[in-house]
Length: 405
Image (cartoon, rainbow, N blue to C red; front, side):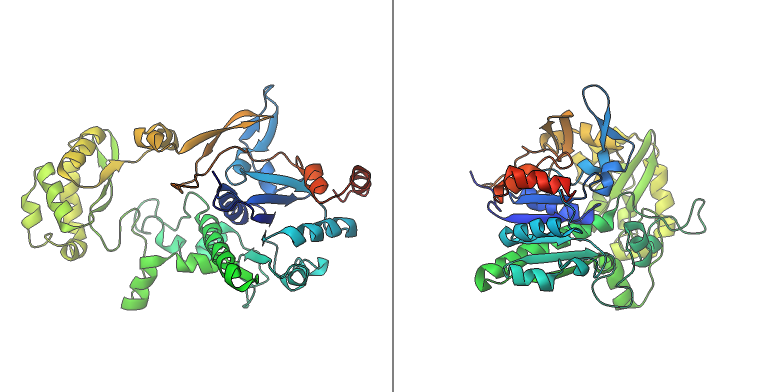
């Protein structure tokens, strides 16, 4: 059984999250991903802890952060700032299909590792650059980090409670969502370029910027502004265009009610013992519910407080409206549906034993994703990769002495 991207070779010169998220997706799809890391240090996230993975004797190793986006890769430690290391990287470029990097704009040009130079070495190379602000524009040379982009790209302005509510103010999302979305957009672009190369025989340069991705991902909030001219504000966990669509306290915790249409609202009202609200002209349609949000929510809250999380979830299943618990992360992985979908996987690590990872959400009927390779130890594949390039043991020893590897 072959993998979807079997035979595709990826050079991963990226660090942190956006680039590694993209290259992990490519590895999941079956590509051979060679992660090029700094000798002695490696990807920054190897040290972004605690928590750290521990070996059988309890000794700390790489940070848990590193494990979220580096499975299925090989680790090559290489210093391309020295000529001998650069020469090795150029040999790898000749056999590569894809290169992913997230250095600052122009950062690789001084080493002759920019797209213009490498496309002469390998015209079929697909070269993806991931930066905070893109290759052009007045901000191009600025460093970009997820939280900064969430702020500058508008996401924080619509995340959090309104200013007048206790605890109100802008907030970032609980995970580095811009990095993750950027990694996914980068993967999409890479696969499109790979398809185009199949027809044209030529590689190309891909410019993916965190800020561009964040603005694109404003989705309906951006459309609300562009179409209606109204600047969206913060509504906590409520929805600007759908009501009721927010968390509610109940007898033993909180539930999320996510009513998507008028039929679901009527079903909820029937289950909650307030069927009259569904025929009330103030609330009969979603547009009216949005206009009369302030009147409706307290009426619903009174009803929802009377029952437990489990009772509401059972009523939702029976009556046909979307409602669920607000799970902590441990409860997520204990959930029967999550377990049935096998979203937690374990891989064997020579150093750490069984390592728990989150499975890819992509499911294929003919080329399923396999979980055979844990995130690599720093430099674990250096000699093997060099040997595959035809570098003999004497030359490998020489490169080590020069600290090129």
